[in-house]
Image (cartoon, rainbow, N blue to C red; front, side, top):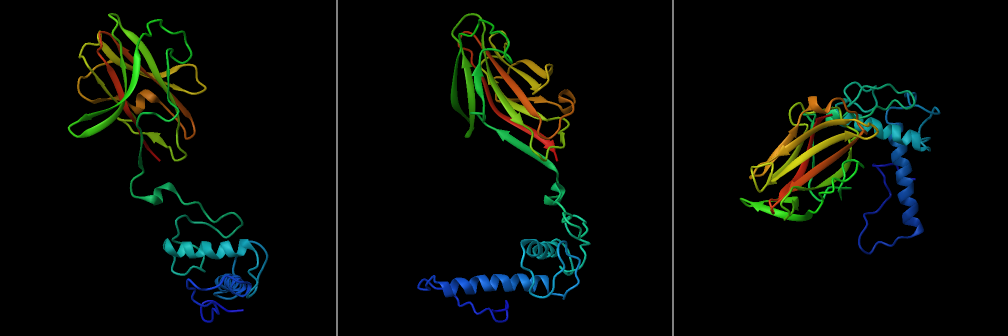
Length: 275
């Protein structure tokens, strides 16, 4: 059997190299030899978890993975992969299961995170009631999906419009599970919802926002009667949202109200948080 890399006994492959039993066995032999070399690079007696081993006895996956873990430790700052980790991504011992998880903070200097949800929102749907309550009865309104281009910026949007003389309403509802790295909401712009209306009068059209936490009966926060003839943002602060944890589910209801063909639009939703 060859010992990688001094005598690999594995020829350079070409387009005409046959795939046969001999070549396959050489390939397997070299993988085994590489594993043995990794584990025995400094000699026996190292503090690996599992059964004690000597040269070329790295025959189980646990020993092989421990060797590769040490190489990764070197990439993150170790002087030698076979020494006890001191500058790796996370300090750890050599006990079973103590290889260490890579912390989110090691992925960059900033722990700020941003999630964008453009229409059509994942899992979003239209409904005529707020979180299962009775419909208002004023639901003679049409919702369409458009791309609104302003100054060469295209925004995907839901558009609610009604020709009735009194305000008509409907809701766009969605659920969003907070990601595993969620730590806390951004202080001032925790949630931002793009919106635009055809009139500056809330009596003609407007957008309302209602936020719930799944499993909780009380409304968390809301913002009503929003109007702006230019694309703008409705911003919800961390203080208004309160405390949340990774894995919890937001239930958001976007209410579109319109009369006399004055449309109300909602676009991208952005979640800003720290890990």
